[in-house]
Image 1: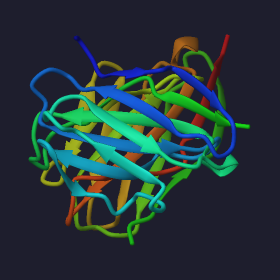
Image 2: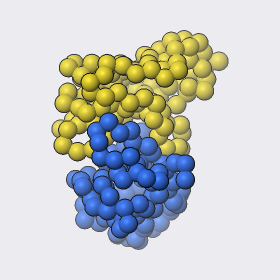
Image 3: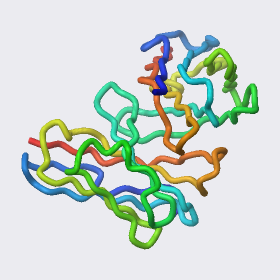
Image 4: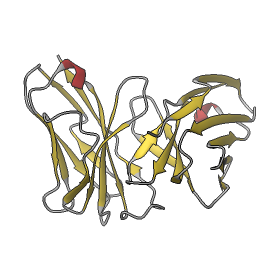
Length: 115
Length: 112
């Protein structure tokens, strides 16, 4: 595709449920990033993949959050036992490779609401 | 820990006015700085990327400058238009990883 795509665009769930959020990066981009944006705030880093491996997961808030990228393309962010505080927009970005001069291109985000 | 601050938090200007948005960061050891635009309920659109070795970048009516030593960047928008209304975010990539650290944004409204 032409850009980064994310599904679903909106997800409403109940407290305690499990959710999966999907990201399709730009074709050929080896680096993939997940960020979380709360209302009125800038995005906050969660995790970064280079290829299939998580190169930096220092932003994951706790062990309820997990992400995978098994084939080095599509990534899934998984949240277990969701809490109301997890409500936010989850943004995915990709860049050509890990080089420092690469722009990150963002998807439209998934708005997660935990009731 | 890198911290990014954007001033002002909100700005309202009449159409046609030139304006400057400010971004400051606490750790000057950055690889690059990106300016983004975010429309309500939408994702981020990359506007300009400045490498640490560069001092400015231009795209159309937009000009971004970078003073790494003082930890500052400005985004200059010339001849503003109502379509420029959006939230503008700056983000820096700091050594030790590829993650971006974002400011909280400046919400711009350009009025007719």
